[in-house]
Image (cartoon, rainbow, N blue to C red):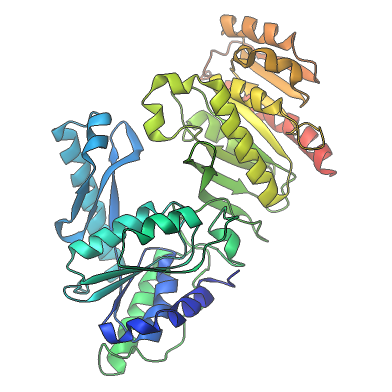
Length: 468
C-alpha cells in the first residue's frame, strides 16, 4: 500500500539506481504517471518528459483500438483488427488525422513549447502509477523504442501478475514493486489515489526543468521540493485502465476496468460513488446501446443527485459487440454482471442493485436470481426500463430481489411481455406503465417519470438493505 504517488515514485526510484550510469531519460504517462516519474527523475538525476500516445479506434466502435500513434510519426497498426472492424483506408486516415491533432494539442499543453527530450541511444524509463491491463504501457514502450531508445525499461509501482508477465516479455527490463495475486484495481494500492490535473503535469515538468537549469545541467535536477501533493483532484475524468478502487472519504468519480477472469476480458465502466451512498446501482444496457447511452446516463445522474452510487459499464468488449449473437447471450451477460457485482461489493462493502434496459433487463434479472454463500439474494433491488424480462426464462422464479418493471404505455408488445414475466416472479414486484411513452421514453416527461420511479424504488430498498 502506497501513501500516494509521491511515495510510490520514491520507492520505485530506489529500485532504479542501477540505471544511473546509463544516461536515462524518464518518461511519465500523463496524467497519473507524471508525479511518480517526477520522483524517479529527481533521484536518478535524469531528464523528465511525458510520453504521448493516442489510441486509434475503429470508427463504429471507438473503444476497440486498431492501433496507436506517437509523436514524430510513430505508427502501430494491428491489421487483423482493421480487417475485423472493416476499417476502409479513408476511415483509417480520418481517424489518424483526428488523433494526430489531439497528440499535437497534448504536446503543446504539457510541454509549453519545450522540445521533446531526445531518446536516441539512451535508456528510456517509462513510468506510470500502476498497470491494469498493460495496453497503454505496452504502446508507450514501443513508441519509446521507435524514437530511438537503446533500451526501454518499464517502471511501475504495482501490476497484476498476468499483465506484468506479458509486459516483461515486451520490454528490456520491467521494474515493478508489487504484483499481488488478489489484484483488482490500481487505486486499491494507494491511500490517496485522487486525480492529477493537466495543470499539475505542466507544473511538475516546468519545476523539474527549472531545477535542472539552476543546478547547471541535465545531470542533476536539484533538490527543490515537490509542488504540493500531486494527487489533488483536477480536471481529469479518470485514467483509463484504472479499476474499481477502495472507498475514499470524498466522492469517487472515475473510469474503471472490471476484470472478468472467467472469460479473460476486462470491461470498461464509469463509477460514481457519492460520499455516504447507501448502495451502488449497476446498469446493464440493452442491445445496440452502451454505457454512454444518454437515457441511462440521465437515470444515473438522477440517482447520483439522490445520493446513490452508480456503475455504468459495458457487458461486452468492443470486439465482442461486432458479433450480434453476443448481444443476446443473456446467460453470459448475466454471469459477467454477477462477477462485477461480487467484486464491487467486496471492494466497497455496499449493497448492490441493478438497473436493466431492454435486453439488459433480462441479464439483470438472471444475475439477480443467484444467491450469496449464505443463501441470501445477491442484490438488493432490480429496476427494468422498457425491458425484456421474458428473456430471463425460468430464472424469473428464482429472483428474490424486489423488482420494479417500467414500460411505456405505447409500447404494447413489451407491456404484454412484462405482464407475462411479472406473473412468474415470486418476489416483491410492481409494474408501472408510463402513459403515452414509447420504447425509448423519448416523449416529454417520460424519462423524468422513469428517473423518479427508479430513484424511489432504489432508495426504499437500498436504504433498508444497508440498515439505513
